[in-house]
Image (cartoon, rainbow, N blue to C red; front, side, top):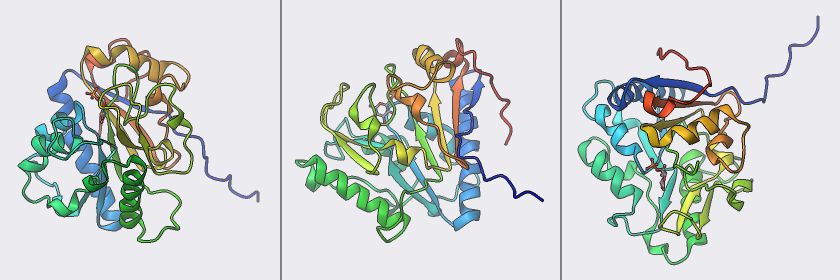
Length: 266
Ligand SMILES: O=C1O[C@H](COP(=O)(O)O)[C@@H](O)[C@H](O)[C@H]1O
């Protein structure tokens, strides 16, 4: 008898869900998150989430706040990217998430939310290393783990195809060793940020882009219908098995995509 074939290391094809409008997107996103949460808790009794800023926090909060079955006490929340500003600054992704979500969920305690160390704002390298250390402490408690495996990473995508703070053609797209990296020349203000790197995104159990509105149409078609490219950083997010990447969209965002849509079933 021949030996079983080794498991594939080829990334699985992205899964595209499209809902009639942004409201339906948010409602189904809440179900998707709770499913990811439940599977993570069954695996290791906690749920590690990396969230983005931009349009995502509002979409996420709409039906998650007050939803039955959310085990907030099991959540550990990180930021997929963060701007190097104080936490109460209008550009802070933490502030945005706090206003839209965290402040509405008293069960989610401040110590479960992993923010940047604002005492290091003057030194992007040091701040980035400190945030990576927070990840190392949370994921392994030791430095030997090669990459963290997030249960869920929620991403946006800008009109230029950027995701997290990974911008088209930027040298950070070739980063292979760091988990978190600083960027001080972001083409979108503010210029100084930190971001999870592609190796971390591509190691996650599940990554979900959440995209609503016509403004996402052109780049979504490029990300799904064309070959992966450094000019479209979102196209480079292709987790290795058993990880998967989902595009959770409304019909306005997916209108010009040729890529096959999948019926949403949990
Ligand atoms: O600068 C950023 O932009 C992206 C995309 O934002 P969106 O408003 O187009 O959804 C966001 O995902 C990221 O967290 C943020 O820092």
